[in-house]
Image (cartoon, rainbow, N blue to C red; front, top):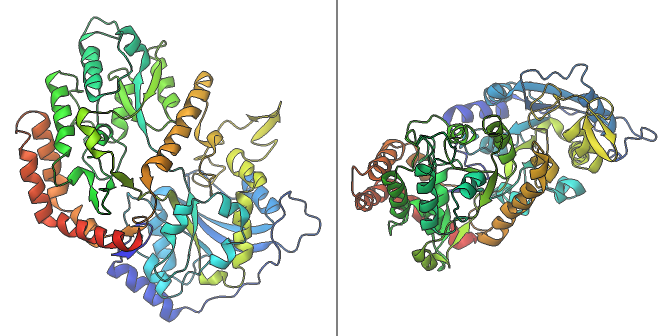
Length: 533
């Protein structure tokens, strides 16, 4: 098991590609810029702009030509950037092909998403000195240091002790359950706190006709057919947290870690039993196991079919706005994790954080040798007050204007995915409320802000932030490809929820899980945790 922030696993193809680079390529030296960019964009006294190329992922309509956003960045950051813009769906294939040639840019994007699991080139590029260490340069970048999570630096630091990447940080948060407040009030139900409260609320939704259409066609909760998948913000995981049985690594209080869903004491069957009870009450969406994709459960919420969905605080107004197109009087509220009488026994267990809040990152190739600080300074400007305003809102008097101290859009299509801007921007200030809260329903802004703050505070208060950040186990990656996880796991959960098998079938399945490789995964994680916590 190695320390790496994005669970990478090198493939033979990647090795051949990068080894050919190391043997056949001579790093090109470019004339560096000599000064950091000014913060105010005053061209007086500036040296020549720093020239470099950068590969970034973009929306299909993005073009750097005649683009005021691109021109503004170059002007204000004292840069002359060549933008190698690749549509999002082709970015990793294109980047790999580019890196296999001698025609690669000074700055490339690295994939850190859990959905991809691995970025095959990273380790070989480090080994063959294709990418450059950056510690001595980022330490001088005030804004990068200010707006990068401490845990992000811990996660990306290579096992050789160096940092080879400027992380593109995103928010680290927890997501809570949103429910139909108008339905709860119509049914005269309290805000659910215990697991039994949730069952009672869902049952009332099922039989109480909260949408006043005279039919029993409303349900408590839905999920996508990926509900048992490794990643994703899913509803059954929300309730599994009651027993620390969700897809998190926990410290048991004695310095050992275990994976909640696969805990040897079989605690996940309590979450399955809860869903089994909901099925008996007819409170489960009948399309629970056939919905396609993670967005399906949200669709069922904003179409007025189900009473709840697990939401990021910044997104609930988006779907509530859609819901009000069907039910104009609809309201929503967030609810904290449920408790249960037996959950007290788990109080000493804490989640060991594995999410380092990194959403891709930027590495400098050996073609940037000699101008590392100048390029990092450009990145640092992007997170300054001036740069962040440009990244977030575009160019003043082109994309937005300031009226009464507030930003007013001139170009309505200026969004994170528009033709004007690189995909989700180049950098983010992770916890900037004005970035995450879209203000689709103005009267909800303060409420969403309150829950946004709760969602980030939850991580601070309920997680251990050392020990498991930035590691991967090749055995774990292999396990998630096996039939026992991709097929049997889903099947046994469905059979228990729908009453086709008894709860005790889970105990037998857990034994099979460990025999099929999870014992080795747990052993590796514990060995690492004991040394690094």
